[in-house]
Image (tube, rainbow over all chains, first blue to last red; front, side, top):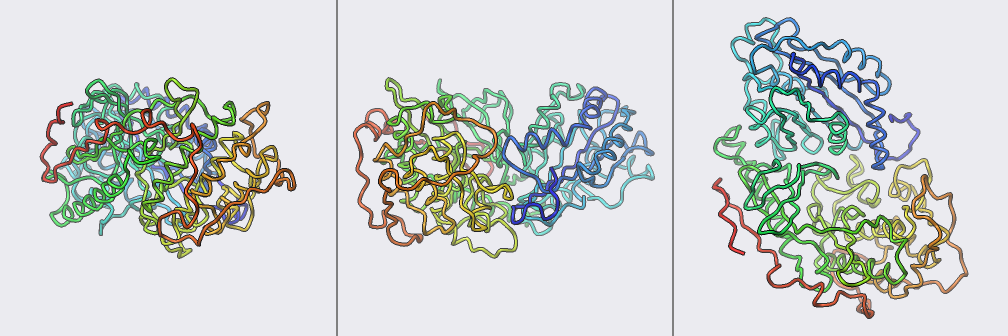
Length: 236
Length: 381
């Protein structure tokens, strides 16, 4: 899918960055296995669907943020990759995803907002002609507020993220925003999450956000991987 | 929105989807026993008192929302469904805000399953293309560019009780006044049907002025579409490029199917000229449709093939070359540009009783509230 530099002279160059924020607590085991089994074919399926739509992607990068709960498991509450170009780094992407194991998550809320905050501050592509910056959140649970005391005292809490949900909202931004870190026309947020706070509030207030409510605790069973990929492609 | 929600009296009956792309999700809905198409806009979002962000942030967001509302109201107010050609423009039944989110509702259109006009007779094809062009003419007369003209935004519907099909033009959410498009990051359009000047506009660093985006943008798309409707494929272009606009922008021409009538090939090439002022206006296209023989295409040729046509230049000398009256140079002025008024052929214009909007079906647009109050109950049927 990624073109050879200079191969298409004068073409509209389209850069796509995708950040997958995946809840890897125990209840997510069924979906996680599905994600793993699709890891090898993800970029191929994406390029097939894009070709059917007659669209070409000049540069595709994927970043994975796997989250659990800082208040429960400080040592592995957050694992993330850099942006991995596909298909060139498909191996590294696959290796990372295969190593993810569903663990922990005793109480209902998880550290989903921290994962979202990290995703927002990703080093998004700023070049080429048109860009699409997609954050996808997969979770079956609500989220702790940012900087909850139990999370901050874990010792591994990320310091370089928004300090509050208001600040995170401003980082996500809006059309006339003066403090956004996201490019307004490029960004999309796809929420596969329960219909409860904070996800309901984010879906209501954040622009360019699509909410696919799942049944809390059911591990997103009702979403087929193909449907999720199609939804991601539709947003490109 | 979710399946089962009731928004301003419209009950959402299907699972919302973002299929078709764009900045929306959509679903089908019912109200009063009728079926509708409901679209949820992903932006902007109206800030409620309980919404996140500072007071200053909310003030800026409200200004964004007001500009959004005005743009949509402006286009909707200009589109009259009872004008000639207007009966095939699917206008909004309602445009409202529910909480933070904007919605637009249109009547549900059940399209035929035609993906190409190839199975139709020449006369049937002429009716489809004329009704499409008449809808476009109405837009262009009021100086509005559709902005996202492509087959997905044209629903071909069989006329009840008649063996004819008409084209219903939908989705005006990316429309703009000629020469005044939204900023390059926001302007809509599809790379497969976009015009070269549109491509330049959205590509960072070219410095192309929005004034270059006129109704000629739609005519470029129309040229590609008419070729696709007749043959099942868009015109070809060199493989080094990813779209017709990209190729034309680099000085190439699209290649037309040699089985098309030479005058149709010439029309397609003229419509896809890289110079916007060289493209015919919609009135000239309508005139061209009067000569139905130009729509002939061998019915034994199947519509869909993979890959691009292997080439072919329009054959010269067969039949008379169709003269396309360009009229005066293109600008932002509406009107026919000095061309004679289109001559309606019998059966090609919508019959008044079948196509003209009945008074009770005129859009009864529900006005939204700006202070966060929920919209009022819908007016009685």
